[in-house]
Length: 101
Image 1 (tube, rainbow, N blue to C red):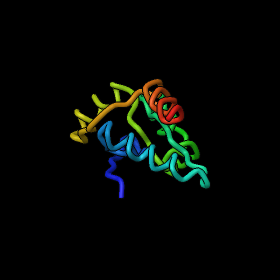
Image 2 (tube, rainbow, N blue to C red; image 1 turned 30 degrees about the horizontal axis):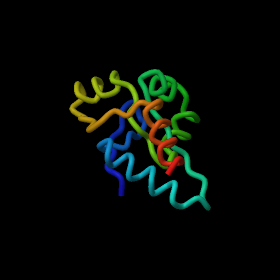
Image 3 (cartoon, rainbow, N blue to C red; image 1 turned 90 degrees about the vertical axis):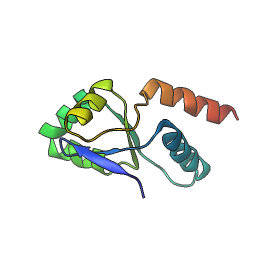
């Protein structure tokens, strides 16, 4: 079970960078299923806050990663401390490393 929190109605999986990478590795091991991973930033959360359909799509993702520093800051002020931030570009780099292996 993933540890998570909600900000503006959007679920954010509250995982460390190591836990995120473990989850992604597990997803990649099971190539028979399609998975949906998002990297959330403040702009995405604001759009989701205004658009219920978009919010529902995000909340049904297999993994919602905190991307933006602003998101961690909002979490801090709302006492919803997010363990880590993993930028989408860094996640892509990790995926390429995994694919290379």
